[in-house]
Length: 492
Ligand SMILES: [Zn+2]
Figure 1 (cartoon, rainbow, N blue to C red):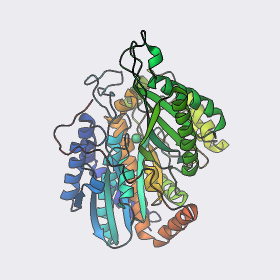
Figure 2 (cartoon, rainbow, N blue to C red):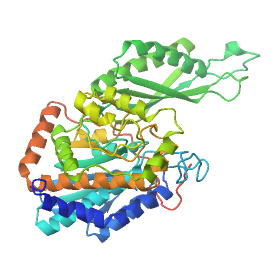
Figure 3 (cartoon, protein in one colour):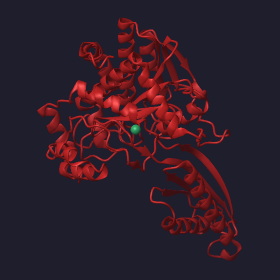
Figure 4 (cartoon, helix red, strand yellow):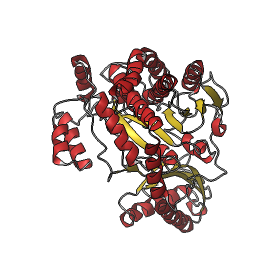
């Protein structure tokens, strides 16, 4: 038992402390060269090369995706997975400074901290390898380089291809504003195009000859906006018009609207998709147009393993809080000052959102005037359904996992913003990343030391998935987009 003997736990955390410079450099290299979904050629190569040097064997092209790989070390059972992501977001280029200024206007940036996400998981896997070599613990370790979390969902294709099937448990974290394992869930999503076909005509001279595909799009949106009142609270339906015609004097022959439809349960999401289909067909009927419906991709809801989350909190307590310097606090405050939400607003929202019990609310309230929260908190989100989506959902339907969050962002900054890029390329993000690496490594070492823990984790997983086999949220025909070559990373 690693955690019951602090000296043994110290071996794991000491190795990470002594070797952190190389991981910080890896995270910074990925931060400096942000690559969009499916095109993470340099980031994936950087991590695979490092892991190969450490004795891991590398398999590329998982599920036919060029930037997806698995690095494996050890043999036999159990098999533990460390889950990495490395894609950036379009348009979020930002200098390493606390005020908004693009490094390269219009270029991508790491606004979700995935430069830290993948690297922290690499660090954790290698730390556990060193501990296994010293302790003689048996089993296999796998790092999964998972592309395109932000757009398209690499893990969905990897899950469909069976890449996670023989894992006993997976360790995963995501940069956030608090150190907290996850017991909550998040909604599933499908991205769907509705393309309408009508008949072009001169909009001034002979509009009666035309049948407007744009009218159909507008009427469909009106219909969906009325549907909103009659679906469950966790449902989200949002859209953009991706094509609306060429010129006002031509009745639009083709028009297209692009929807994300989300719900906490996949069977209810299927119902919503069916009702939206009726709305689309109704709009086509009204306008004498036709509609073609194309599902682009989908993510499943997240299922959290509470036993694993509690184990991660034990590891956090052993490690202690993150200590931020006055310089880091000042930097974070300068970032926060650019956004309307104050530090106190964040604390009040979190207390309400997580429905914190009084003693935990009091502990969080100590950070009321702070832009960074270094303390550790147990998983308090068991009742919370996040209305965003992640492809960790698909992994979580197949393997026990807990979504650990660590402090890499300031409290006042919204997700996917330049403010997050600004803290993920410097020491604040580095500290959050190494904190996560330690928590995951200690948890993994504990799982390898005490087989009963994996039994308990599996029993909980089996209970929560009983009678609900995993069904991928995409059909067989949907394939990941191919970006065959590195080097030419079409960004922006
Ligand atoms: Zn993310």
